Image (cartoon, rainbow, N blue to C red; front, side, top):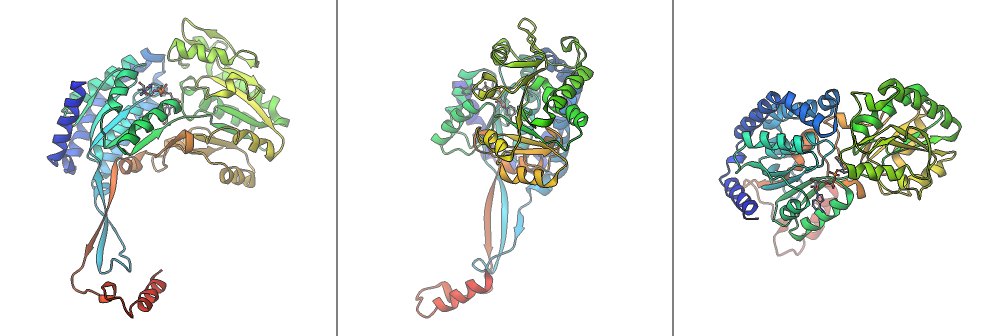
Length: 459
Ligand code: NAD
């Protein structure tokens, strides 16, 4: 406890020195961080492999590569991002020069999950530092190798007064959340998100909650089934389905369901062989607790492919479930594993009944070649973000905000939006002194008519 309190106190006094407001100082830190990450590239892949057999290809694509891109983006654009943004003055502020200043919040707490343990700790750290904050980062306790490496990188580059890591599980997270922060950035599950929101509310601390949920994938009968199967198998089985924006379940037009199932089976075998347990490209489930949770989802449902569980090696085979009931385990909560339930629809009402049965999802995917169908789905349903005719890929554009809505989270980040997330937008109006229209000053008698005309004219 004392240690955490001491670190926060030291970070707060460093913040007051105004050193983090210096853009060159931030850029120097980010460049040093990049150099350290690049020099640890092999170690990062190795740690992710040891934690849950994550293949190097996926570790590059979904962790290392994006972290380096975000670092490059921040390093190259930080001067521009942090400049006060001039906006037009209004009838009420005229004569004035009006600006939005980007101001760091101060002491930031970042809590990370296990499923992408490198990018989901590093990316918020990069943007929090880019925005001029100090950071205490708590990586997940479930990925011991990667979390240790993340800690090592952070401790090598940053003085503790600027950024440091605190390792531990629920007890440490609880202790951290009991402190007073200027911003909390949390990535993890919905139940823990609620705990974080409550802790933040006590001090009115602004918070970003990057959570999860059941992300649907709607497929109509105008699609090229083989292309859908290829993309869907990729998106579902990346990280063995342990991805917050993984397609959780499919809603397919009933007339093409069996064709889709056949195509998915073929594609799974093409990607991971007859026995995916032997594939070097198929990760393991993070721990036994999650294997048992997923195993329970395979009870009393119609498994049409896969369904193999090896508790010892924490392996669950890619599995397809035909038409499970909404009261089955697999439809009760976010799956977060390589299991894909396939539900059907005949009418738009059927789709509504399914989507609105659940909370607002983090992602939604629609596969179709019919523009009005796509338009209707995108306009009708509320979800964090999504893509058309491919799962996951909206994550790959740093110009798009990444975040949930409702139960799937609040706030968003990526690219400049990450910088904005960790910056308070401070409104500044610099009043000119060369004129001083008397209309606003008392006595008001005889001025209201003129005021009304001005409002009408300028609005
Ligand atoms: P989790 O909520 O169990 O844990 C996340 C973090 O919270 C960990 O660091 C953990 O130590 C801490 N924690 C756990 N219990 C806590 C408690 N009672 N009080 C305070 N802190 C606590 O989530 P997870 O299992 O690591 O990750 C899986 C979940 O995260 C899934 O629901 C997934 O959808 C979601 N997720 C969301 C995103 C996103 O960007 N929206 C990304 C990855 C994962």
